[in-house]
Image (cartoon, rainbow, N blue to C red):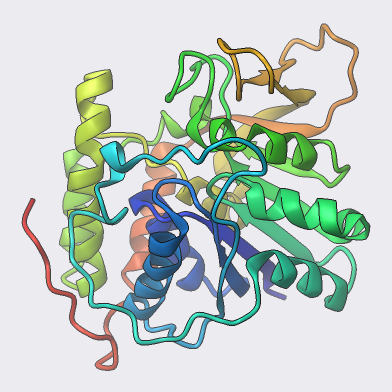
Length: 325
């Protein structure tokens, strides 16, 4: 039986590939996709999700706009990484499929209440504002979540937006605190594992060699997206963060980690948004997350390439207009 999931996301090129991977995988049933503000503002993320769904030939997917601001403080965005659109590197047509009228937070609540308890996984690829708000508004849903699989945080790798904090957690540490404290099982994909999954030239060439619109668009996105991290880290390719969330659902044996306690720093100017992960078990605090640290990167890219190859062949998929960057 397919695993039922809700994807909560703020696309972003890496978010886009995570969505495509989920939509290409029969082992997963995507119940809906909620938009968060993060990499770019909400007005763009909800549009980007619909563009990605149409690229995959899934204009039937329900897309719901969520929160436009973090639970507290001012929204921080990352156009310097993702470009002004959030999906720079390949121009896609304006979406035709509608945005659903229901708010994303209400969709999360309603879905968890309507589906059998313990059957829905929440996959968060951006700041966790929507899930944090849902848990605050309807605390009863916490016990109904099968698990939360999230991209965020870091320990040994430090941060990527400050020396201590990873972007998704930094944007809304209050929401992250609520999620990590809600009692639902949590699987965490931090920078420690995503920095081991690099979009090398050979791996991007494999996407382009698929000979499909999806493969060409994916290559264009990644050639744009990786330029920031290549300059920052001096690597061949940049980390491909968010698809690890979906790949873990499909092939958990690609990954290894350790159950440990993870707390979120909310107050300090120096470490706001830091995930304080007790890898060595020195605090005595209860373990609340599976912290993933290692990955078979070749196996991950083989899976991603294989699944993307199944998308974009139908005549009904509209042809994207590519922009050279």
